[in-house]
Length: 334
Image (cartoon, rainbow, N blue to C red; front, side):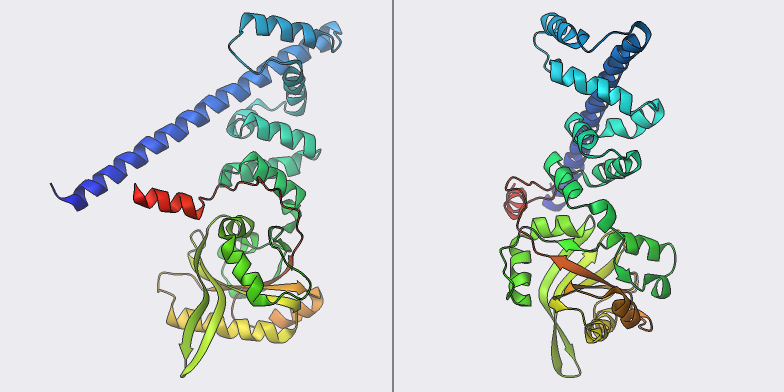
């Protein structure tokens, strides 16, 4: 038996089992969400047709607990949430295809935090796409991701073809919020860079889905001179390299020119023929939008300019859907 062929077989079967487990969990969750909606809808219809008050919920909770003593979820509070859930969503198709794909706790959080249905639907889609935990969802709502995503100053329309330019625009945010850093006003860019790498999982969470970390102070040799990129990533959805430059100062036009030079170098020295053009992200402490737009107007390389915010209020128990370094190491040891 060849070890290489066996390992390939094992990895393939392991992936099939994991995919089946995920599908089973999703299926169970979907049935539970639809059940809760049906319960809430039944209570709602009785209230509307017979004029029942909220007093029916304590009685119903008591009887359901008696009938199903081993099943949790029929408390007065949860039944009240089911009723509210049914009031919020009256489109059964949308319920089954979208809302039912995220856990009950996520749905309750969205109802409590967001009144606007359009914005709520946007966060639901993001939960599905990124597999956010409830804590991550809560943080993304508090950090106002809905308004931050796709709002950077960039030149993508002039430097990238559609629909690639639109997808790249939605990949960027403004501002980027790095609440997990321990920093002060006089901190240097290298200190920011060091702490971002130390908290790589949380950093990748803020960057968004698709960013794969390549390295920091990435060395390039050009015309016998040494240059170092602050941070280099590869974006798996955009199929391109991404260079991130950090500036703990206000934006000045010279920063864009230097980043344009770096992007040309990466396209020539690193990028493969099958890769899309390299994208640059310039993160500054502050910027004037008009000044930033002028700086990018005639540059031929795609880049965006965003502010970085350093506010220390990230919850201690924030858990991203990304694996930690320890989890990755354990996986390789299996």
